Length: 380
Image 1 (cartoon, helix red, strand yellow):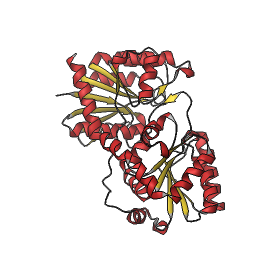
Image 2: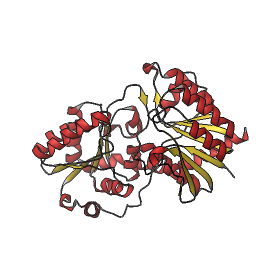
Image 3: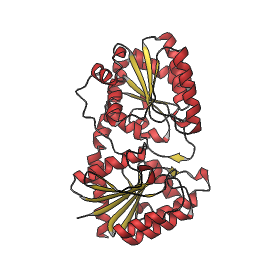
Image 4: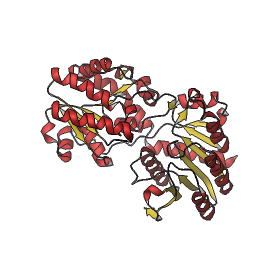
């Protein structure tokens, strides 16, 4: 029986990787792996707790160097068959401390796995040496896209060490809930006869929330029955500035609604079920290669989606190119949004190609791929 420790953020922390970890751990547990611990950061508090049968131990500071507490906990709780680190640079800032920590915890497991949620491109320069050391410290490196896979290979990481496992998808249990019922549960039943565009997730420059707002303002003048619901909270100083612009639009432009909160899983699914189309107007984050968790939430609710052509949304560009527009191109976004309003059934039919991706990347399927990798590593 496998004994696994996941090192990662974990709910209730409002963080995409925390949600990712929760879904992965729960799916692995459901497949019969019962001996699981989550070693998380102090954002979750100081006390050990249990999420069902899963022990959750806060033991490191997110975004800071210094991992003595984490290493002590790994030593006292170990040994493990697998230690699996969910890596993101905002959580583990590049430093020699991170490499030392990985080498130390490697002593207390049979195999060390790292999921690189963000892979830095060579154009970023300085982080590349650190990134290679991260990969060298692990027995296997998981990435979510072919762009990430080959970028690491180009940087000298052994391709046999890299495993591409897609980002998981939560398949909605709300298929029986129609648009009106979803709006009613959200307290937005007054929108039942509106054409609803939805933008979800953290409000930041790279999410393109301001671009979506500007595009919609132009559209609303011609299509007053359309509304835009922006659901999310600001993150970082740029997010705060963008939110001020959203608040200003609430007074001057009809049709913009801002749900300023980190949506619970139920609220998020209701919001997506209520949407006629979701818009992910991301900008390119130069040198950062990843995959959007928000995109997978959208396809897991089987909603049509407009995406920009950025690495995080490559799955949409590959499968439904007619749903993609160039990043930071307001006129192209306006044109696509109008196309969706005027020819909705054709657009929605094209987006059905994403349903196959959603089912192939359900968390149960993704957990199976992880377990297969763990067992393969332990056979070596």
